[in-house]
Length: 404
Ligand SMILES: Cc1ncc(COP(=O)(O)O)c(C=O)c1O
Image (cartoon, rainbow, N blue to C red; front, top):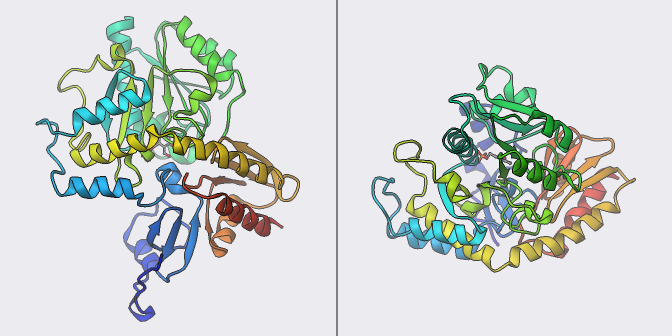
């Protein structure tokens, strides 16, 4: 792809503009992207980079996948927003197609990941009062240490990351935190007031952390034994990222509710949803929950195209095959600047021996590969699922140079 590059003299200093005019709630790599296609992005100077982050899995199908762009353009020419005050001709179809793809009964549409998680929390509490019989305003939700579910005040209330929490209290009550992977602690935390267990099947922001083999099946058993909902946050791990539709599928476990986001919008616009059991999501009544943009026609049209791509199984297959290749290649770096590699499919947390994930990301950027740290010495690799084997090799070879 050729980028259209303005003469150097006319280029605004985009980084300085962002520094001066936007809040400093991110620490981006110093690259200014102007165009992208597939697994590659081009900066304002016309320099190309292999994208090995994929918008934290929002770009599972690559940048500007032709079928997704076509669906968006087609819908832009017809209808973009009605609000939920009226019906529109994409909504019911999107909900049915997403429910059929995910093997669930009902769909609650929202926009961002954090909104999907907030929605799941509200639904779980309502279910606890209305169906389980928990006394009013006493329901509890169990979450796990190292979680990342978004940035709202309620969600940071149960974060264990001081940077996410400090300065943002008072916090929302009604959550208990137990260590990730610790079944005994989970069992001990469950009471008659427990509405749900909320868990990421693989913890993305914590460093692409895969739990012990028997953990998720044990969580399911404990939920069943105690009439507690299992809520799987598959916002980053789901929709083919790990080689299956849901990361939970690897464990043969079904959740009662799944939160979805990121790739559901095809990298084009924010689309999120809670999908799950009819008797759980069915507790909501008109006026109790909603969003002006949730389930808008453009979102639904793009979401339907995403569902069609996922239904082919092609992206799950690519993640499985190329993920095995990626993990094989990264495994060879253990002992050569890499301490450990974890993850699944085209998703890897690479623990570096003697450099920070940030420093490695900057060095990789200088060599034309875009990655990002999760924190500390862990580097996250999560390329778009359209990446080729040669591109995976290129990224790993570049990492090998950087840590040599
Ligand atoms: C597992 C998980 N849940 C929720 C979120 C929040 O999504 P959003 O940034 O769209 O609000 C994220 C974002 O990284 C995530 O990884």
